[in-house]
Length: 273
Image (cartoon, rainbow, N blue to C red; front, side, top):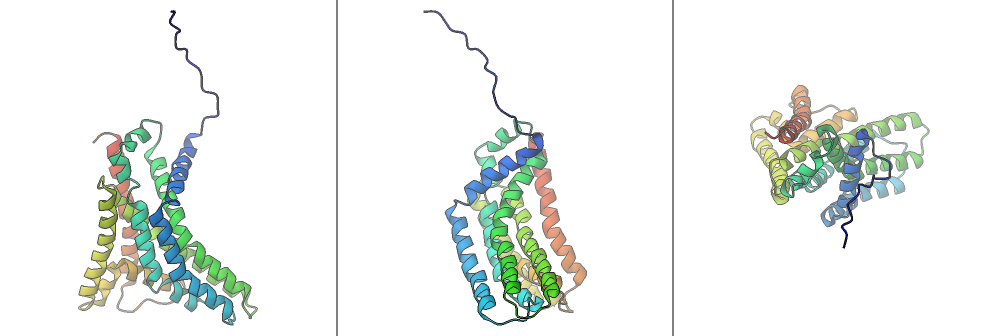
């Protein structure tokens, strides 16, 4: 019997552009996350406990227009922040740790994928799911309020709707970088999820203890700082005992520093250090 040589057969198809590879990563993660039981439960509970009552109140209560105090109270009372915190812990727990555990990380970077594309894909998918709970419903509440208002000052209502979008974006983004950072420190999904949540809880606990001596310590609580920031976005001042510069610095550091740490850690892993 003769031996048939294995011949090279060129692949027929269209190669994806380099700058579109983050989209492939994000789409894969998004398809997985929206089927996750834990994510579905948190989204359902969060929507019911945070948004449904506000939607019903908006529809059935007469109102002149969309008002900042109403939206600030609804988005900044702490319940939305708590659900965002829980959802971020669940979402980000395996985004990087899972790649370390099952060697997917090696497969990612055996191809011409940049650290930037990897992180944009991972972060983008997490932000989309976070936005389903934290950004889209408040905007929908604002639109419903404008559609059912009895007053004619639509310009004012539109301005409040814009502030609502900004506040929703902040809540969406706020917890994700920190969760990714914790996920990059371990190979165990459960460790990452518990570590992320316990870190938030520890900051809140420390803030509560030391706030009894100096109210300025309130800025290190993620939930409280987010609440103060939402009040500011809607045009209301923060308490006089809370330093505005300190609040801004904490929020910036809470987002930027974990992002830089994740970038550096992934970059070092790629070059084998």
